[in-house]
Length: 122
Image 1 (cartoon, rainbow, N blue to C red):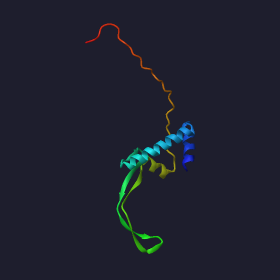
Image 2 (cartoon, rainbow, N blue to C red):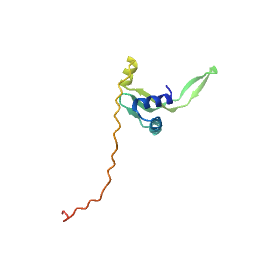
Image 3 (cartoon, one colour):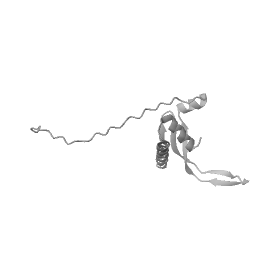
């Protein structure tokens, strides 16, 4: 599944427009990436955890010249650890149940300046 297929699937499952899903997905990816860049973990309970891990420097083999050794420098890399619900879904081959809350209309309440008539309370 690629990004556009994911957007289509989420749009069908939630009833949101594709444009809304696209904006939400871009915002989600941006914020996960920003948190990882700051060294934070991002956890979705049941789904998994994204984190930044430090890889040590090590020796490797040049794939173009297998007899030649090369130094691979230390670096920070993103990592993902699957959660229990995701592991169970993959092992069983069954999709977890989707629970989506219906859209609730937003009611904007205007603030009014209500002045108490009469005496002040002390």
